Amino acid sequence: MTRRKLHHYNFSAQAANVIEAGKPLYEQIKGKWNEVYFQNSNPIVVELACGKGEYTVGLGQKFPEKNFIGMDIKGDRIARGSAVATEYGLNNVAFLRGGIQYSHEFFAENELDEIWLIHPDPQVRERDENKRLTNPNFLCKYAEFIRPGGLFCLKTDSTFLYEYTLETISNTSRYKILEHTDDLYQSPLLDEHYGVKTHYESIFTKKGYSIKYIKTQLI
Image (cartoon, rainbow, N blue to C red; front, top):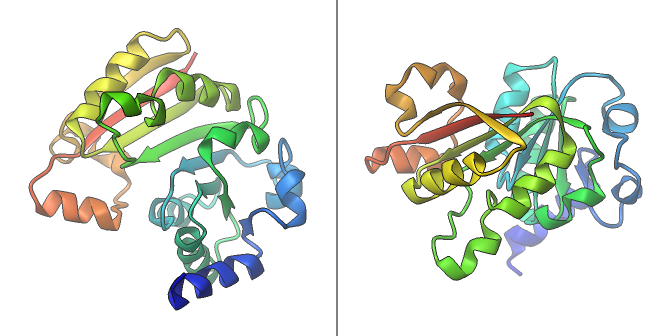
């Protein structure tokens, strides 16, 4: 482990806005995010596979009336988002270190208002479909946590993942596609971008990739 990673892991271990194994709330937070952590009744938005938490922090700044949770398995990544949220004094932002396949251990039925996926790994190989975060199994899992009428949104530079997700959602009875575009920056949906652009999205757009967007609602 590099010295930088070790520093980030140590930071997360001490950070009040990071929930991870070994901390009291890690095994107690399910169904209690509003009551115990945020101590309010505001809507909860989760960014899965949040990486460094750029989108989580960006949305937290723009919507102080909502609560935001960035979830990722990489502790050194969420430590960076945690540090920025702390620097900005964002009490409506938290980070959860854990694998998305175990999200049922941290979120209760109908506890969330929105789930966002921002540029996840498209896992293009057929044998890796079970790892795609928009495969049928994961979509069913998310539907457990999102309240009826709540939102599930995807942003991706991958045409493959965009088309795969559209088809997968069309074949499920749990979600209704509200809007979608294969070129967000050139569409009327650009305002739904909220002006928040991650580091990798900046790289993708400079290379000429269009950004795809899907907005769905839980039925």
